[in-house]
Structures are given as C-alpha cells and as structure tokens.
Length: 166
Image (cartoon, helix red, strand yellow):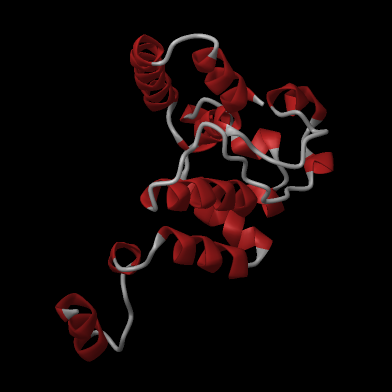
C-alpha cells in the first residue's frame, strides 16, 4: 500500500494510529488491544470510547481486563453478518467471566447464561455507541422487526422474537 510505504521510507516505519487502523481488520485491532498492558489498554479505551457519553459506561460495568471480551463478542457477530449467517437464533458462546461484573449492572445480562443472543448484542453496543447512536440503532432495529412482523405470520414470528431474546 502506498501509504504504508510512504511512512516506512519517510518516517522510519512509524505509522500514525489512523494509518494503522485504516489497514487492519476489526479482529486485528482487538488482538492489538489484548496484547497491551491493562494500564495502556485502559488509556486506549478512554481515548477511543468516551464512556461517559455512551449508553452504558463500560468502565463502571466491567473490569478493564474484560473490555476486549465485549469487542470479541461484537467481532463474532460482525463476522456472522459478513458471511450471511442468520442472527436471530444464533448465540455467541464466547465466554466472559461475568463474576467480575459490578453488581449494580448485573441486570443487563443473565449471568447464568454462557452465551450471548441478539438482544445481548444490542446492549453491548451501548458500551461503544453514544446514547444518541444507540437509540437510533435500536429504533432502526425496531422498524425492521415491525417490517418482519408483516412478512412472517404468528406463531412463527413470536418464535423468532423469542429466539432473539433468549
């Protein structure tokens, strides 16, 4: 890539962060975060994700060692979508130690489950989206569900919705 070569030859291969992130996958970004020491990982999260503006403040919800776990769950769903897989009945069994979830937030996820369903993914997105973006996403999903309701008769529609929430 010409941009990478430019920085290799002119700047001793020192890439600005924006150049790096334009050229790596979401999964590679998560791996880089996982390799960082917790202190540096926390700095990156605080710099990229302004948690106080988001629907849920991840720093109040999870231990900083689990931030990348939430991104990994999103990555599994992203890959599922990219390869035309169904989401409504698919469950990510990426395991997160939920015993570290702070008790005042334990109502967001069923800590007895060892998987994440579609409804959980909507909540996880609240860690990374502003409240406005998260509300807009939820509204669009509700519109799509309404359109789906017109196309799938009951009891089948009710079963699809049940699978999305369990």
